[in-house]
Image (cartoon, rainbow, N blue to C red):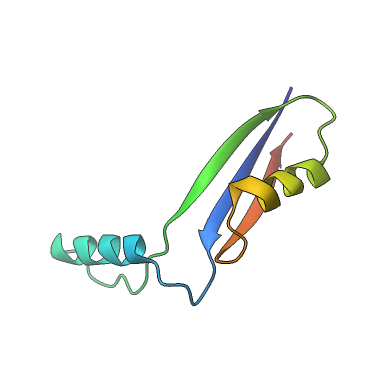
Amino acid sequence: MMKAKVHVMLKEGVLDPQGEAVKHALGSLGFSGVENVRQGKVIELDLADGTTEDTITEMCEKLLANTVIESYRIEIAS
């Protein structure tokens, strides 16, 4: 079995209301100096040995990421 992580983030220039809410909350808690927050998600996959990165990319393109507004990065654990 192999493991992969897919990191999904909104593309630059796309409004990130959750990131803005976190930034505001950090400021309210007294944490100064936070100029920008982008919030994303990490999807962990347990995959059969031999699953290719091309297959994982296809999963991302078809379901795991909305490629119109999100970018993704695949990390395969060794």
